[in-house]
Amino acid sequence: MTVELPQWDQVQRVMPEIWLVIAMCAVLLVPFVRRRSVLAPVVVTMVGLVLALVYVPMGSFGTGGTVHVFSGMLTIDPFSNFFKVLLLAFTLFVVAQWLMTSQREMAVYDVPDFMCLLLGATVGMALMASASNLLMIFIAIEAASMPSFALAGFRKHHRRSTEGALKYVLFGAASSAVSVYGMSLIYGAVGSLDLSQIAYQASVGGGTPLLAVGMLAMFAGIAFKLSAVPLHFWCPDVFEGAPIEITTFLSVASKGAAVCLLLRILYAFAFFGGEGHYIGLATAVAILGGVTATWGNLVALHQGNIKRLLAYSSIAHAGYMIMAASLTAVVAVGDSRLGGAILFYLVVYMFMNLGAFTVAGLVARQTGSEDLRDYSGLMGRSPALAVLLTLFLLSLFGMPGLGGFMAKIFLGMAMFSVAKDVAFVLIIVLFINTVISLYYYMRPVYYMAFVKDDENRMVITPQAAGFMLLLICALALVWTGLLPTQAADLTEDYATIIVREAPGSALSLVEPAVAAVPGNGH
Image (cartoon, rainbow, N blue to C red; front, side, top):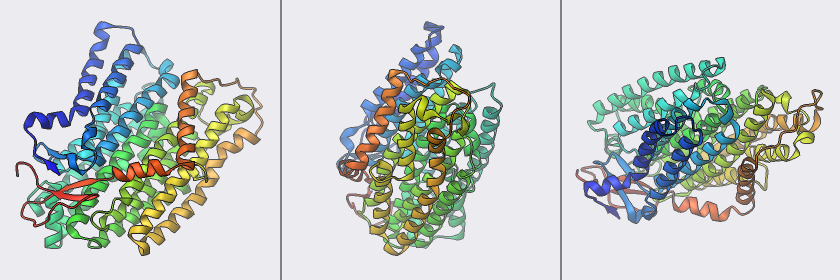
């Protein structure tokens, strides 16, 4: 059931984003009260994130609490709420990671700006998961991108950080220009910015060349956030130059928000077009995902820098999720298996990357380098860190018994269950890429276990809080690997994407996975 709300109640539905904006303002005011305090901006940031997390409208989980607010600009549904919970919790982990890895490198007067930008990017990514109007989609992408540009170049005295940030800005500006041009073409073809209306007009009119070109251009903005080939060139340089916690944040949060947005768009077209109607669109997106995964894995084979290696790894994992998301364009209405599998993949991916990048940050802080050769002898010097990093890398590969394996299994099963013929090809691509990835994931393990440390580097001993964070990530991966059913059922239950009924269409409410609902005020 969809609820039409008074204006104030609509504002309450976006309280998580409002709390984040309030926290942004409060963080900037902290220096006027505590001029040389490092922890004060961090505390304000974490309080804002916790308040936002508490105010995510958990009561709307399930189709009964779905609402469309601000004339249909945003859709607050179980799917968007689940991602917001994941995003806010992950951002809290990233702040904790910063305290353990990069805090000492940052000047006291830079901390409020850093935290403000991190909160700003989080706001944009939260909006991306709920956006159901082209104008809001563009605003959300830009709100996520602009703070990310500044965060990528926050190490102002590092040449690689500046170089990566410049590439990020240039690629981001170009993709935004192409994307907004595509949106203008879509508006010219359909006469509406509403996603449901666009999908409905495309289904009844069969689409026009103008609409097709506009959709292709609009997807450029989403592909940029996903670092999909060929809009991926910024990713390795940004990941190498940015602070380790920003690399972690962009590798998961940015890609997760873009995947959620892609799913919402494809679900809308699937609903109004019907099962199998948009096979061409699904094929194009699937090819994009396959090429992205393959390119990411092949280039990762030659990387000697741990952050660049994990950057190409993140490109490959984005490709896997794009391949699965492609089939949502042809699923039957009411099928939530793909959405649930992708959400489960995001949950597992969050812990894998958070753990791997945290270890990389701890090693880099001690050695001053991110080269794989500096991991030589780590198994002897710091066995706990070496074992944990091995576990995270094995999970990224997909080792049975760990969460990464079950995430890929569920992804493959979901694809096969909704489109057997097409999915068979995609599963083969997924399997081949997984085999390829084993080589580069094992390279750090080889250096840690089998290469002698000739420089007698110091033992790396993480703080208790840092070790606890790594242990949480490891336990989460073991749990989702050995007992995945509960988490998988949870994500499938919340993979409910609601599509507004287009004005003039005769479609009625359908539950649970994809539903058309009357717009409020239209």
